[in-house]
Amino acid sequence: MTEALDYSRPPIQLLTGAFCYIRSAQVLRESEEWEVEGQRLIRPTLHLLAHGLELFLKFPLSISGRTLEELAYKPFGHNLKYLWDHNDNAVLRDVVLHQAEISWGLARDSGRWPQDNFEGDPKRAFVAAIYVLSRLHSKESEHALRYIMFKTERAPRSQFLLDVLFEVLNDAVRRPRFVLDPTELRLIQGVA
Image (cartoon, rainbow, N blue to C red; front, side, top):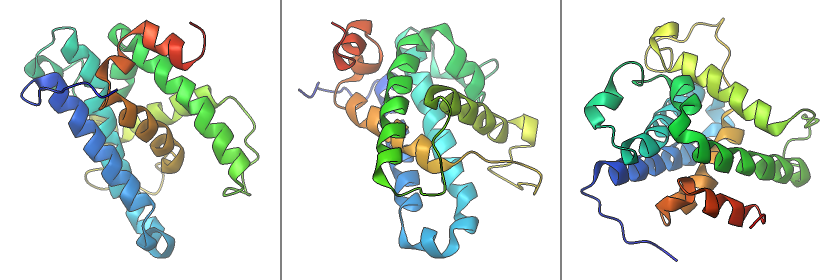
């Protein structure tokens, strides 16, 4: 069931904005141009992805009463790591990490990535990718995704992040409580 959204409310603007940025990154990543010029499209794809993730991680904080002005500055700002680790994002983290396991398994079974052995923990891989993305999205790397990315910078693989975030956001824009209510999480995990 789809919930009626009040698009004038800042939390809903954050959520729908996040969806638009993640979907745009996904379109770029899955484009024919990526097959030809993927190296040149990595940074813009990651920039869209990072901005979408930032907005998504600010959604629960906005719901809990923080203003857009508060979320624009330290300690929040562009700090994806801080936003990800924030207590108000506990349910969102659980939902996203559950989807990371699902997306990892689907990618492994698809055969699209024969060069990968899919060893390791998908949850740890996802969090590690967010922490790297956080650095690239912040002043710590001189905003490498917006300006100049030096050859020494390592970037996370966009496809895994996009697969996970798109699935969660696709549900969340239809049912915002999906990433806020622990009961919803237990239902999707089949625990309830």
